Length: 354
Image (cartoon, rainbow, N blue to C red):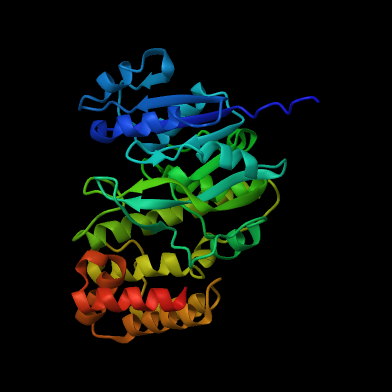
């Protein structure tokens, strides 16, 4: 009986000043139970002892040490240029994979696949599991997700370490524009990849997404800064999607699409409420964004109860006095800001709407 040839896989680990997490990340890539895996570590001009850790692995990994810091996209581009796998994973240096991650992804793969997405455990700095991302009650979008992308510029996906891409797809959309995606390069890839094939989804957690005080996922009191960055990032994603889509005969209107995206509209409201002076969209109003968010919420792929609660939340932020609206926004977007009774209520509602 003729054996089926293995699909070669590349795991690219971009790193900047994450020496305290880097060994765990590299070890998790090297300890996969799948044989044909190359591990590429890109150091983006770290100022800690990351390079010492990388050098300790000698010929177990491919090391790419950048002389000048270029950000997320530059590290992705450098690692991809050094890789050879047919399936490519980008693993953030503060995250890690479970030993069966690659074999699970390969088992899910087929000829039509452009991207595989998986859930991740959310862990703290001591690797204690706190939650799942995305939460299980939010169903992944799978198959041909282009209709959703063209309609509202987003589909239900995950973050860097839960994504795997087809090499031919990446060759069609890379290199990633480096100034525009200095952070959030995974958003660029997950937005453009579905133009070249199907998205497959894995419900089990294949690794861990670490939340800590230094990463871009945690802002705490910097609510306005986070919101402005995400709004701007969405505009850049949509422009990249529009440019790429026009090349294959598809049309997208970025400014119209994002107004049908409740995730984007949340951030628009947060930016507007928290600091109107620096808000990136001059003619926005809370009332208009709240109304648009309510309509967009009712179109989501989620339970009716979840959609109704989110629509009511949008409307309340749209009409409440600004100080109250800002508090309600921060309670939703930054869990650490919630009063204890609201945190308990939020967990109860979440389980009820699952």
